[in-house]
Length: 471
Image (tube, rainbow, N blue to C red; front, side, top):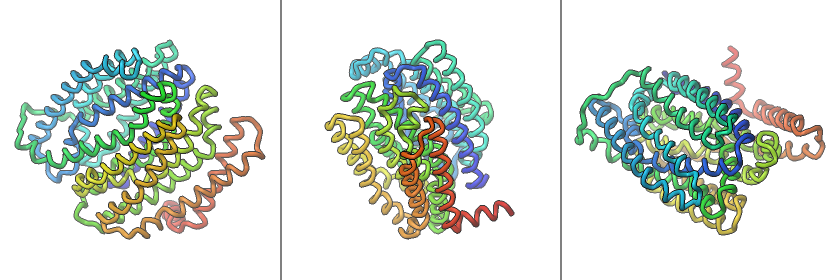
C-alpha cells in the first residue's frame, strides 16, 4: 500500500473514531457528574505514564529497522509481556498512595481495573508492527472502528444504568481488548519460545532514545493535568480536560493519522532528503488545510459549542478551549517532527532538544498554577508552545536540508484564510440571534464558505488537485 493510500485509510479511521467518540462523549458528559471526569482524567494520566515504558520503544524500532527476523519479533514480544507484568505489580502496590496523593478514594478500584489493559495489549503489539511495516493500515483502521463502536455502545449502556465513572473505565478496557483480539486473530502471528538478548541489543540504542523522548513528551503533555489535579482540584481538572479533549479531536484525527503513516514512509526513504522534503511539504500543506480552519473555527465558537454539546455545567471550559485551540494549530504541524527524527534514525535529536522544550513547558505551566486558575494555565501553556515552536522548526528543517521559505509557502495561505474566517465569525455574532443551535449552524456555514472561497481563489495547488480528481 502506498503512503497516500495509508493516509486515506488512517484519516477514514480517525474521522470515524471522531464521530463515534464525539457523539458518545456528548451523551456521557450529560449523564455523568463533572467530578467523575476529573477522576477519569487522573486515571488516564497514570496509565499514560506507565504506557511510556510498556514497550520500551522496541515496537517503534521494529518499524524503523530495515530488516527484522522472526527471532527478534519473538524476543521483543516476550520482553514486552514481562515488562507489562511488572507494570501491573507497580500499579497494584502504588494505587493506595496515588489515591492519597490526589485525595480521591475512587482512584484505587478504577486504577486496578484499568491495569488489565497492560495484560491485554502486548498480545497484538508485534502483529500491529507487522501490519505497519507493510503499510496495511486498511486492516488496522477497520479493526479500530469496530472496537471503538463496541466499547462506546457498552459505555453508553452502563452510563444509562447509573454506573457513572465505571462506564468510561469499562469502555477503555473493552476497546483495548477488542482491538487486541481481532488483530491477533487476523494476523495470526504467534511468538516462538525464544528470548535472545543479543538480538535485543541491536535495537536497544534506538529504542532507549524513543522511550526517554516519549517520557519527556508525556510530562510535557500531562504536567498541566498532574499539577491542576493536585493543586487546583479534581473539578477544575475536569473542566480543563474537557476543553483539551475537545481541542484534540480535530488535531488527533488529522495530524496523528498522517503521522502514523509518515513514520514508516520516511523510514523507507531515510537516506533521500529530496524525497523526504517532498513528502513533508505535501503533508504539512494538507494537514494545515484542515487543521487550521478547524482550530480557528473552534476558537470562534468555543462558548456556543460547549453549551450546545455539554450543557451549562461545562461552561467553565470555554475560555480554556480558546487558548488550547491556538496550541492545537501549532501542534498539528510540529507533531510531525517526531516522525522525521525517528524515520531518519535520529531519535537522539528528539531527546536532546526535547529536554529543553519540556522544561520550558514545565516552567510556564507552573507559573499558571501559581496564578491560580485553569485559564491562566492554558495561557501559559500557549506561550511555552509558541516559544518552543521556533527552535523546533529550525532543527527539523536543518536535518532534512529544507528551505524555511518553502515551508512557509505551504502553510501561510491556510493560516491567513483561517484567521480571516475567525474575524468574520466574530463580527457577525452580534447580528445573529435565532437560538443556540441555529446560531452555531449559521456560524459554521459562513465560516466554511469564507474559508473555501479564499482557498479556491488563491490556492493553485488546491484547484489543480480538484481538477485532477474530476478528470
